[in-house]
Length: 158
Image 1 (cartoon, rainbow, N blue to C red):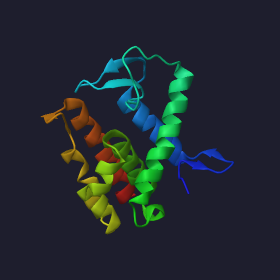
Image 2: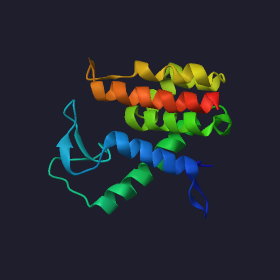
Image 3: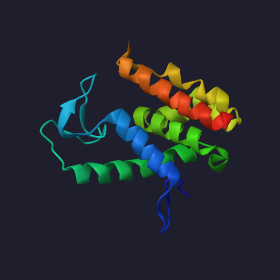
């Protein structure tokens, strides 16, 4: 079951944290633009099916983000041996990472392998390695991964 939304209850604490974290990293742009590697992007970093010239309302963007997070969470959970054993803060950091790099990349990563062996601290420490796009180190990704790692480790240490 999703940790972002519980049936009939609405958004959980983890869900609120995920939306705030990812929304903050991605930023909100209601008109399509090209990201740092030239991919048409809109709203909170959505790239799937986006064409230059597309435009959305803020409410449409919020709905799109909520729907995408549930989809990415479902995909991430399928690659976890014991998703409910992962503490909330690392879980949210891993979801932010998955939303950014994609479900396939998460599932094939050393980070996911570490999660599945119970090495959450080791998984957190994998995050900074994922700071490239188009073969280049991207300052925004370096910052994002540092923040995800910080949040992740807070959940391991608390």
